[in-house]
Length: 341
Image 1 (cartoon, rainbow, N blue to C red):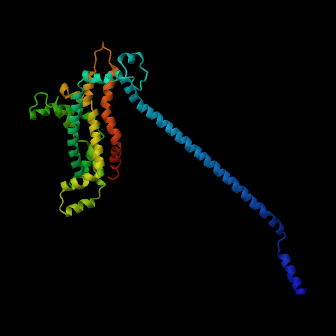
Image 2 (image 1 turned 30 degrees about the horizontal axis):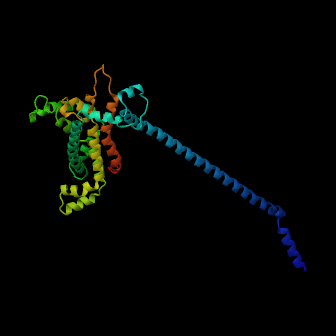
Image 3 (image 1 turned 45 degrees about the horizontal axis):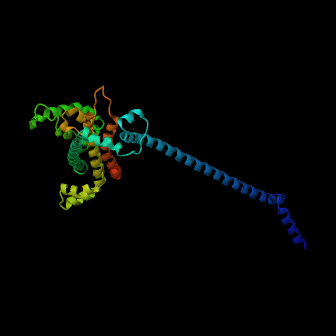
């Protein structure tokens, strides 16, 4: 090795740091630490995931337990009603808390047969059906025309009128009871109804409740979701408003109309205060008033609770069937409204 090569080799050796071996020896330790930290991080992630899964399961269990309890609270009165209707009067007062979930024989249905002999249930059914159908049909006509006018027609004061209608929804309906009673009592002279006016007639059970601001609002919001371009195109083609309403808007808003029909019929079926206030003639009793008057007993008589429960069960069956078979239309009609305004 000559002198130049020897000097170059010395320069190379002196350029290498003295702690090179220490650095090389610490590299495996750093990789090991990273590996350990990765394993610990993975364990921590699994622990967190397990805790989250347990928390989710416990939350679902708590939710289902709460819903089960609430469902039982809601359903139990109906179970008690049906169970009581299957008892005789003596069985009811001997063991009031005993639930008869299944009838023991034909004798358990005697209460249902006795309802027809004790009350004029068929007449009450017919009166309620007449009032329900007539009021629903007329209310639908008014609701459809009003909602269409507020959704598509342009006239001065439309927004003010709509705001005023919405404001009336904040007023309890009971505040109008005296006004409506005075109106149906005095307004009947136009049709020669005598001194009592429309009291004790089908008119007083129908006319005061033909207009529902809530139904108008519900249908108006549904109409607002239909593109206005369809209406403008129909006007260009020469289609009048009634034809456009019948051919386009009503078919598109059919779920909401079905919901309104069902809710209106249910309201007519369950109404109590107004018929009780304005009808004293049994010929005009609705089903709620008829049953109340039929089972009103004297103070010294023992009320026949099983018979009453049998009557209430029979009255509740139509509404129950309506809800079971048409509930999807109710929910669909309501959910499609109120989105755009």
